[in-house]
Amino acid sequence: MGLFFPVGMRLVQTTYENETLWFWALNGIMSVLCSALAVFFSIVIGISTNFYIAAAAYALTLWCIYNLRREHATT
Image (cartoon, rainbow, N blue to C red; front, side, top):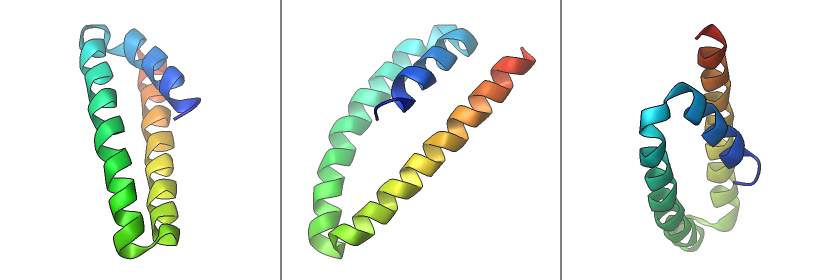
């Protein structure tokens, strides 16, 4: 995810130090699962709809990073 992954991992390491390995595992699982789902969705519902789903996923990622930054600022 380009810039989002390193920024998110840096925030997670400072906020949830003990759970960092779980977030690495989730990243690996989601990378494999979502790449296969993206191909499936492109075939079944069309590539343009797949782009909208990807945009929603990026928006959700931005929201999560925003909340992590806000939580990190309060601790």
